[in-house]
Length: 86
Length: 313
Image (cartoon, rainbow over all chains, first blue to last red; front, side):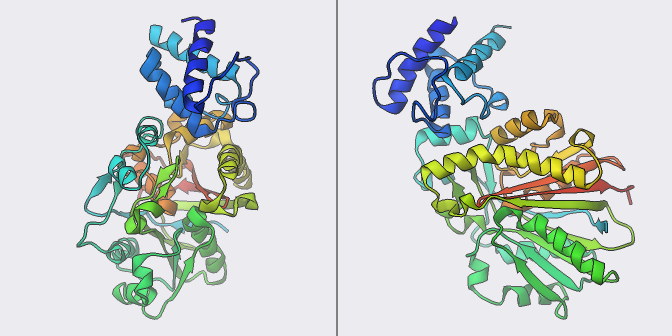
């Protein structure tokens, strides 16, 4: 799955978690400040992606740095897929 | 002045309860329950059976730690302020009497939440500086299961009924040498369980950085660097938190002992000492190893103690 596809899935999952339609996402959009998520809802978001796109969360690699922006979250997901493909 | 510490006596109730059951009873939703299992790695929580009493666990831990000896001072570190055995009144007198320490002084240490037990070690050191001929018994742990709602820290951890006991002396043979203890606090979060969602979010962000700072300060106070630590024996709140601390502090993950998280999870201020006992029992500790015992508390309080492993007795 490429980055554009990941971001598209993120947008759908974000809309579900936030219970409102989310428009275009910029890599620099901040999850907490700009999108009004909190750390629990980000984890919910990731767990919902496990169910929908087969992402496997590695809790050992989760941390505040992942939850900074749409870009950092996409990096984490992309890395997760790359690891699973090895 | 370094003091000596005995091995840690850990006492657990005869049963543990699935974390999922506790969360369900506390009314937590399915997503949060999944998060506790999948992300935090919390599976079981030590829970007193109907016929068991918390006070008996403290007495058993105290007896094991005293090993037939005595102590002039008993320090009891605890997080929760309302516990069933405390409400019955007379807890210190009963414990002293059952341990044969009726003439000894007994003090509770609280209001610094889960740092209370490690803080007791610092108070023991201060006491022994004035009374080097004496011995101090330190007890720690809480009656987490007294109330399902009170034992659940939303989104973070669940507290169990585990108890620890150990003794501190100024001289003589010991299992660990207590080198230093460093406390910090950030009172922006003093509302504790009554924090607003915004404050709780800020607290969770600050926690990792402040824990790393606490590790660095304690290592420096012991005349070393974080790189030279052989083990980090953590507050066992959840697995994700320690992954972040490990990366941020540059401490290899394998040095942070998280084995107990799925087995008995978080037991308030007793965590780091339970991890120390586990490291010792599983043969990981070697003489000269230096271990950081870390506690993190709502409020917010942080405490890191550094101990060095002595020769096997």
